[in-house]
Length: 237
Image (cartoon, rainbow, N blue to C red; front, side, top):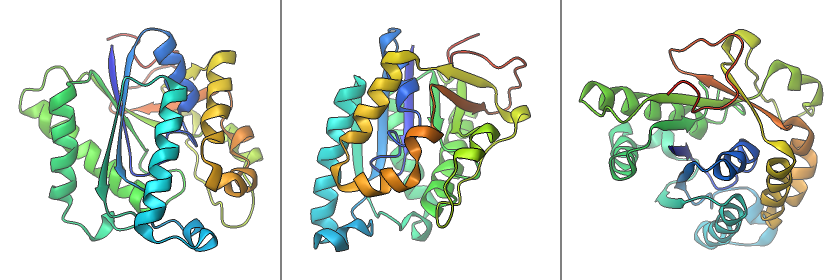
């Protein structure tokens, strides 16, 4: 089955559902990633004395290495403004996402939940735009679209959340509709994908992401409720 993950920045996939993505590729699914920006506006660029464009090139190469580790079938990176999605006409972002969906015709689309996990405005915009495009395309007859899901953190992850600026959001148990066990291979790929982001080593350490995102990776599924949660996003399709 074909899945399309849509995130705003390089590393969103590796700080999140990387283990599940690898598990899905190992299970024979065709997994694609659309990244809306090159992530060049990150504050890390100041430490490296790089311009936004130069930092974007570095982040792009890190992303390409991470997606190779995960065995993804396809990666498409556009050059929308990092940290600037909120200032864009949302219809322009919708057009980018619609074009990718029309080209790939995925059965499942995955993005951030409504709280964006970090609460960062690029994440919130991405959630809203992906949801609108998915529903509009369904209404217009895109029957290949079967499910819209959102990678999230379970409330049980709260005890691992670091203090200070990492004010991460979680989802309560009643909203979690799928829990994918990445297995040893998926978890190992998650760690290797994180290691591809050499410029973010200190952020990776301080965020405690290696312990927050465990082998059991949680997803909300839009307008579906599953109790007990599914064990794969393709279940029941």
